[in-house]
Length: 315
Length: 315
Image 1 (spheres, rainbow over the protein chains, first blue to last red):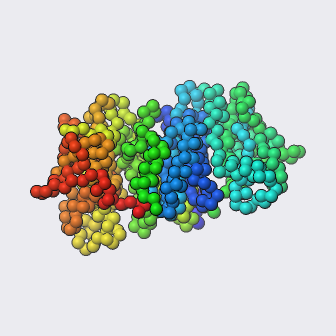
Image 2: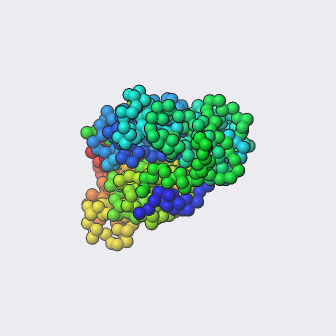
Image 3: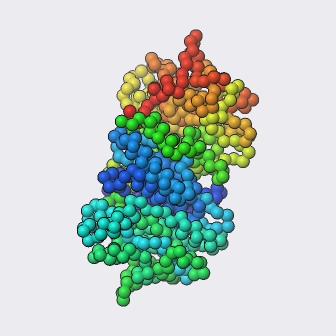
């Protein structure tokens, strides 16, 4: 049985592309970034949990999020929809209503796509962003020792929402309002267009900086930036923005560090960059891996120890 | 049960985008065209018939073909692959070998994509082309009365290949070599990069012209251009390039007119455009629909009568 990591190694080796490894590919000659992400029924979502409006919304936002991670301006998106025969016209109407809402909120326009049959619902979107002249493009390799680490919002909420939907978390420990908040974080995540623009507008072409979204969790993003930038990080757990209600869960710290699909942005930028619209959670240092200070103790993570805790599609 | 046409109407109404309706979307501010097409197991291909090399090759080529239909230069492509757990590492290696071969032949580079689980193999690619300065972008609405209609190569071969693979055509009427030719047309279609470039290089920004690929058949492409351009066409059936062996089939004329997946290009261009690298099959006239002269008789087709004969995913 092939693992996701082994398949990704095959793909990297076969393609050998300088473009692989960031949330987006930067096509320098065109001044454009491009990204493609798919959502698959029973892998990424369950039709019983999510309305077609929510699914349309999320399909757009997860792709716009990748554009935001590059610091470029989200502009256009294509939507390829594969649908079983029993999907109704109303479902499709709802899907595009949700997609249009996400487009309106994030400033992108649907410009095409494809419609095919299938035996499960599958959505694959491709988003295009424009490099703004004079602003640098963020990569995972742009962090430098001395930079600060900034996150755009609360971490872990989406994974708690998923746990509630799957019945793996006892819903009675939360109020109805708290449940709704977690579940909405999961079903309708919002790409960080504003945070991305505010960071990128302060970065010129000659200053490297790093950004990545937390689609696979906060620690995954930090560990990947650390590896690709050849640096280490020291993170103060207390500073990570957390929804208060989350602390009702015994293992809430794991949700904050490893929970995926929040689609927040993590940025590593020079100290002088103004970041009051986000939260500084730590610092980039010489070294490797991520040290997380929790109370009196420090836990060290490298990419391997983080990925052991991340959901895998092929295992 | 929703039909494909009714779903496409919903999508058009919901999005109301000026971009929908061509093989590619032209993003004028970026000087870029973009297209996305998906291939789904048991809808577009059967794992028993096609090797992973062939599937990788075809996945790239069907998307490059859409870029070629715009007259722009194919440049980049992303590949989102969704795979069941039982797919081997060797299969994935083969897929990318085929994909790389197609990229090398058509001058495009793979710049990213996505890898997810699924219960059937699904491939969704997104290709990006560059508008060449001074050359116009072809659309389906660019045909004008008096233009000539040019096709880039033989029509119907792919559908005969599919018929052979499905056992719907008696394989004994063909030689082994003929069978191979038809089946290869189906499994490894080749995008018409050279034809597209030779046409486009003669077209300036101020001259409208039409191109479309024959992914859904020759008559489908002609009828769609006719509707969108508000013109009619007169086609001389005898002039359509046809593989000689095809005439062994009783209904070979239907394969030539309605067979899909050849990925040839149809162009409607002014008479003075030099087209010796293709075959002139008819003329654009005032009116509507497509008149096909076959021997002494003329058959008239409009988009509805063509689409009744085209394969539908949702019916």
